[in-house]
Image (spheres, rainbow, N blue to C red):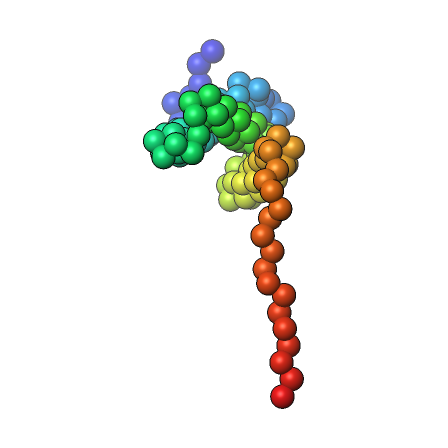
Amino acid sequence: MTYHPHYYQPYPTSAYGYPQPGGVAVLGVTGALLAGSMAAAQAIRKVKNKELDNAQALSQVAKESLGAGIATAAGAAVGKTLFQSGPLSLAAMIAVSIGVKYAYDELLMPKTAERPTAPAKTSKSK
C-alpha cells in the first residue's frame, strides 16, 4: 500500500481516528525505557551509597519502568482517542499519564512509615 508523498500522519491511526494498538505500544515501550534509564541512574547511586542491594535496585527499576510504560500507553490512547492532534491531545496525554502513574504508585509501591506532618500553627493574639 502506497501513500501520496505529502501524506502526513503523526502516529498510526485506524480509519476511524482511534489509535492503533501498535502505535500505543510503541509509545508505552518508549516511556518505559526512558523511565527505566532514570530509575537505573538513581538505583546505581543508592547501591554505591549502600542504601540498596542489587536485588532491591533491580526490583525498583523494574517497577518504575513498568509503571511509566503503562501510564504512557494509557495517556497516548486517551489523548489520541479524544483529540486527533495538537495541544489538547498532548494535555490529555499528560493528565492521564500522571493519574495512571499516581494510581500505580499508590497500589504497588510500599508505604513508608508515618509521613512527617507540618507542625501545627499557633496563633498569637496581641
